[in-house]
Length: 321
Image (cartoon, rainbow, N blue to C red):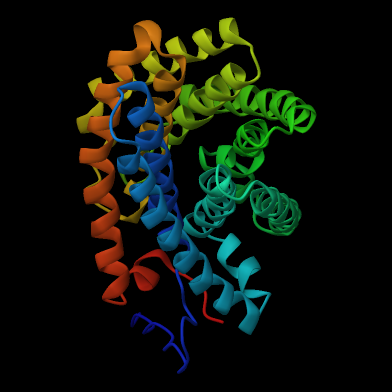
């Protein structure tokens, strides 16, 4: 049977913005915030972290704008993107980018940061509803638990961290415990599924997402005063990171793809957790931040390069507005 040629994209700006641009953007945003924290911990010039955060804030705004234009052309395009794995993971990461933007501008514009946080929460709720609809009406195989579920369903922990940094402690506590329960459920179900089935090589980079909620839960717990719990998750993140590093060849056996973007946020978030705790975690945190920088930047630049060539949408099956 002859292959069907890809559907041409109609004229118009950003009609096929691929959600796959969001995971590396999320990783860069977390990396910039990590350098802000690293500058504080290691007594480096504060301008280092602030310049990086400012630059990444502009990048995040631009990337979000490109998808917003697409969504405004045809709002139902989001449902189409949610029907495929890169779209689901990408849009969930896009919501988390909004929370990190709130954290980035918080020290300078606290009022605006709270508005951004509220906007992110509204988008998160809407996306969750849309995802539940897609899961309920789509084929049964779509309802299998996968690591990208952490980004959407337990991704509220990122909102909790932003709320804690903005002084909304009551909101942060509620979000923290809700996200913690959801994360544990996803970890348990994923472990059971992993014990029964092997993960295809192209999808293995997504497994790194399991590290992200552990790191952010620990960081949020530290901000809320739960230092013992934060230490537990710091150790858990270290164990997970060592396992992934030891199985690196297996994890990346499928070769480079847009799904490598899933590696970026967990690495930067782990560095941020250890730097936040300080003490015995100070040096590991600094080393993790440097390692994350050397890993996140090349991955993000490579994905952006594919996007600039117009190939990322085709490779990831992005919907057309």
